[in-house]
Amino acid sequence: MTNRHERGIHELYEADAERADWLVFGRKSNPDRRGFLRGAGLTTMGLALGASIPFADRLPGGVIPAAFAQTPDEFVLQGKDGLIVMNDRPINLETPPHLLDPDITPIANFFVRNNGLVPEMTEDPDGWTLTIDGEVDNELTLTLAELKSDFEHVTMQAVIECGGNGRAGFEPSPRGNQWTIGAVGNGEFTGVRLADVLDRAGVKSSAVYTGHYGADPHLSMEEGRPALSRGIPIEKALSPETMIVWGMNGEDLPLAHGYPIRILVPGFIGSANQKWLNRVWVRDQEHDGPGMTGLSYRVPRFPVAPGAEVADEDMEVLTTLRIKSLITRPETGSEVAASEPLRVRGHAWSGETDVADVEVSIDFGVTWHGTEFTASPNKYAWATFEADVAFPEAGYYEIWARATDSEGVSQPMVVPGWNPRGYGNNSTHRIAVTAV
Ligand SMILES: Nc1nc2c(c(=O)[nH]1)N[C@H]1C(S)=C(S)[C@@H](COP(=O)(O)O)O[C@H]1N2
Ligand SMILES: [Mo]
Image 1 (cartoon, helix red, strand yellow):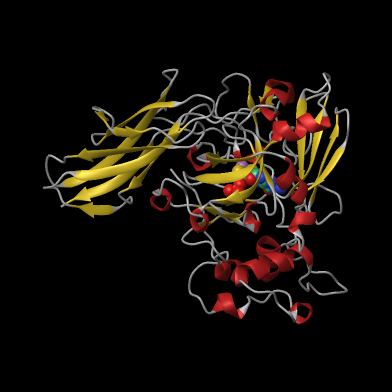
Image 2 (tube, protein in one colour; image 1 turned 120 degrees about the vertical axis):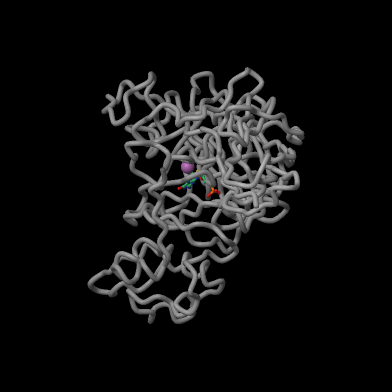
């Protein structure tokens, strides 16, 4: 089913060193400065090495830094542990499901999805500015220090899931990162309500949508060209759960997750959560920045045949997440004792609905068993389920999990509605175990 291609840094450099520079660090060879690493690429390499590189201007292109060359493992991002490196963009890391077991996903295990390059680390986070403009009475520019001092602080848990999570399951295979199940995590975020900030700016009655901008350079390194700029309906922007956050799991937001600030839109697909946020443009029409038009983060308004070409006017913007679950214990491929009940654990989440129930099956979905279900600490965080399953005899089994939301909508067992870019696959998670 999966056509995921995992590529380590060695494989990338062996195949084509210049392209590897480009993919991993966004480094372009340049006839004058022969691929010397600067700007965002340098930040990325520094991030991966865990230190700045004083002689960076002498580091030749196309050479794997020895720090990576010495490790037999794949390229790993500093502060990240055990994640799967995707191959077609700089820094896209997926989390294997067993690393998603804790109720709050540790930063080390939280997936990373970038459309462009990681921007340079700002030296003065308190001086970072956020501009609110467009359909407002008073255009505002606030520093991070002002955001922190002038508005009420809120801490809440929320799931961030990439709209393309599960893309690898679609056939024919859509373009893009071939995420399987782990482009998702549940973090605890601290910040202020976007509504409070928008209130200060005074939202005009003409406002219908927001447009979010971040500081990450486009892969082309073209000045002023956003890598991604998505937005949300004004009702969601004014809803109390939508926040501007600077804290994650009790720490400053890590650089890979948008330091110093990102927008958090609980219940919406990952791309709504703009990282390195520096502008919220309040608009009198649906936002049309990069990632809002064509096939990007858009799906057909009606079911289409797999592989179909869909006309632009038949596509609509993807907004909310769907009911979904994953199994975090045991790890797929485990050998377990046939004679003892096996503890199964996992999480379930949804977009604007609540998770109502999770069931598990060990007989390919013929019979289903209830689970002990712990509701999430707040809406938009994931819930946790646990169950003991008993195997009738030794052999190969699959454990399947299926969540149902508060409106009675369940996860499908087959991959739902094919769409050109492979969004919204919320089919049941299956893992393999051998009972011995
Ligand atoms: N500025 C900026 N924000 C961004 C992105 C990006 O490329 N640039 N990627 C988005 C996408 S597609 C997802 S799924 C989430 C992933 O968040 P994470 O990397 O913190 O896990 O960030 C979103 N915010
Ligand atoms: Mo995403």
